[in-house]
Amino acid sequence: MGGADVQRHRDRLQPQRDQRTTDLWQDIWDPQYQGRLAVPDISGTSGQQFLIAAARLNGGSLEDVDPGFEAIVQLKPHVVTYYTQADQIVALLERGDIVIAPWYIDRVGAAAANGVPVALAFPEEGAIGIIPTVSIPKGSPNKELAQQYIDILLSPEGQTCFAERQFAGPTNKTVELPPEIAQFVPYKDSVQQMYFPDTAYVARVLPEWTDRWNREIAR
Image 1 (tube, rainbow, N blue to C red):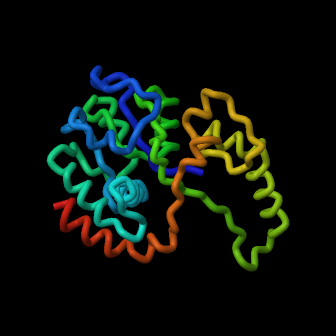
Image 2: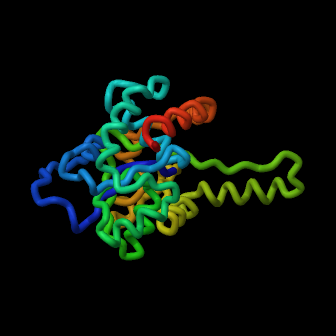
């Protein structure tokens, strides 16, 4: 599993940041990050999830995203860019143009493994989760082999491999990950705090969200 959370530049955080042991979605609105943050565009999953997080943070919900739009509008004067491709964040971090952004959990792990100065923060309010699926096409001529493949994917060995290579959180609860991998994926306690939106509902209302985003935020 994966999702959207808060990522930070590992070396360029302001020294006045408090030393609490948890991180918050609310940190994105901290004045010390003005002019040093990136926000995902609504065209990407992370943008949709950031809107949901902002709504829930400010008393709204999946069905009431008005508070989310209002909160993101407040960020407009301080945003370096609204990114449409996940990899845009890498260059922004390497140049030091930004120090904080909502980003995909697996991308943070992959970037850190490649030497990008980034750290993952699972927000105290909960990251917004994604559960990937695997399906067998109807009428598949190799159904038995496909089922064997799925069994391998869901096995402890398969799930551990995905965590180590793709920074995807394990859905198999028997998996035990080493600390250097566990810190970068949804795992155990961090999973319990995650919010998993109704994706069918999001798909239905996304055109409406996109129109409003383009009117109020992207302009």
